[in-house]
Length: 395
Image (cartoon, rainbow, N blue to C red; front, side, top):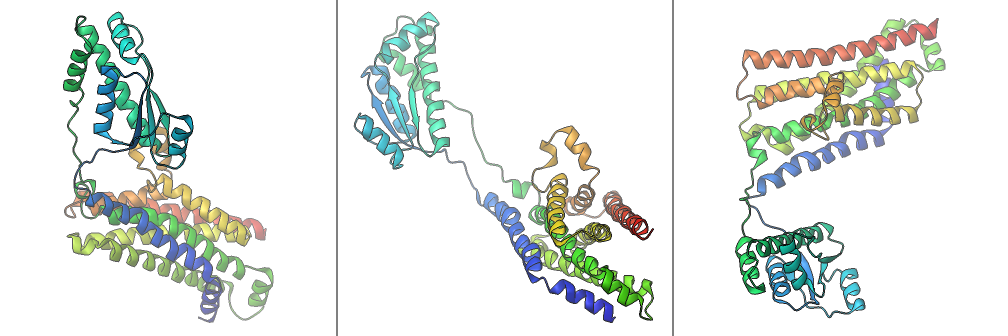
């Protein structure tokens, strides 16, 4: 056990990696997954966006006045003088989010062009820092002008007041909008499932770097020669080193799992203990994949910088293909096909099978076993690559 303790001591000599990759990334996962689900659950209704706008009416016609009144009703109107410096200063200081300029001749041109079927006059919109609000103001102004042109075409003899009356009646009509609580619709285990999906990144980074440093150090020429010169058998040296790495993997997995269970409150949300245990077991099997990857990289004499780079890049790529950053359903079919060649896809599929199911049926357990089994095969395959690299190096 002395070799095992020495290997563990090597891993503990780098507390910065354990702190960043295990604790910090776990807390980041809570913020990105569980925190965002809490915000979604707290949403109880739909509130239209409001922007602060300045309306500059250079036309003075009835249609221009009605357009200004409509936009002032939809947003917060601020009185600003029609001077270039004043308008620029209002936008620069965020006094207003947008400046709406109704050009001279707008009313007459809107009636004439609408009845002639020509291009309707444009409204000048100066954007501020709140670009989304400014774009919304422009969209609403363009819609109002389009309604005015349609009303003028439908009633050729109508005057500006009549056209404004028709637009005032049609403008408020819009589709009904409601908010669907996705967190409740997906089930109480959805935040915990999202956290586990993100944890594939943190576990990959931490295990590849920490276990890789232990294996690389223990495989050093001087240390290995000194150990082989002793009565200790090479199998015992390798076995105790791998045992120390497995202890590190279990500790990383335990910390990540405990943080997720406590932060999400999955056990108090009505999810069965057996389902949570199976989900965590799937994550433990997945943690063997970065362990196998660390073993293969150690046999290739990868440096500390290389382990950090490949751990982060590999973790980011695998977590992306597992659907941690973007749901796979919204990606192209080619990306979904490639994702099936990543262990994260099968691990997350097994987790989704047990957490999304109301009860553990034979069908659910079969899907879970397939996902976990394929994930374990990835670990075996990468380990075989590491052994091949060892034989090639010794030859």
